[in-house]
Length: 62
Figure 1: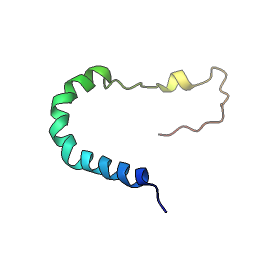
Figure 2: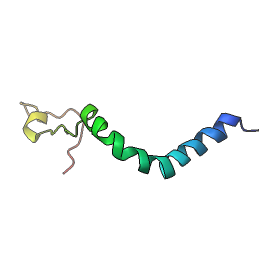
Figure 3: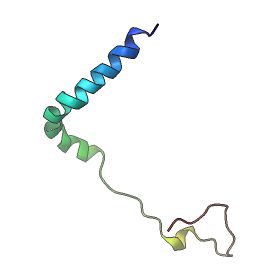
């Protein structure tokens, strides 16, 4: 038997994402953008290289 919150919470989340978020999001997006700015951290290849050429066990992804 499945508990009631295991059924109700996903249904409420689906209703929010499907119907309420498109209505509410335009009003709250300016506040969200102030709290979470879209600044990404960029890693340069030179910063991750070791000076003596040794590897730390991670591979480079190009």
